[in-house]
Image 1: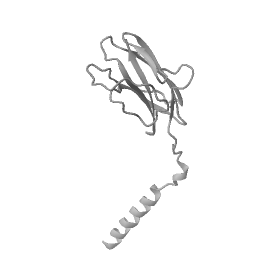
Image 2: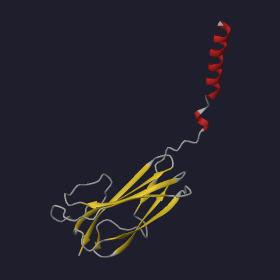
Image 3: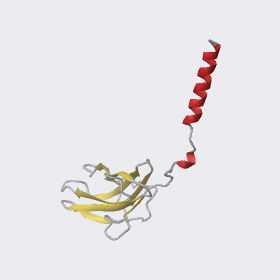
Image 4: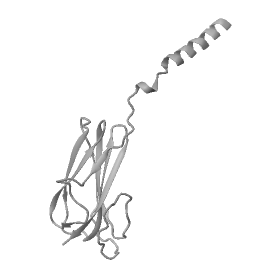
Length: 159
């Protein structure tokens, strides 16, 4: 009986050691994707004014060293003058106010096929009855291993 017990311990130890591998042989993704609006065709640019009742094609360029998986667009009001950590340009803001009927866009999309470069294009309709004023337009992109990059700009909705 002791022999069988010892054999089982040795067998489990060998099985454990055999299942270990050299982690250097795995191609690890240690790079975040990159997302930019600042290219020819990127929209909206910082401080852009969008008119109520109009339709726009929002565009950003996303790249990754291995494979892109998904992206999102978030548009929300900035009536309280909050900021995001990646904004490079300070736009002139209207006075602070309470939201009555603000525009809110929160869309998520998959990127099929895992490309390393992808131009995001999203049609956005600005309804006639939304509050005018200051808004943030925020994009995020995620690669297949879960790394995420974000960028945002101030925009303004006008009559």
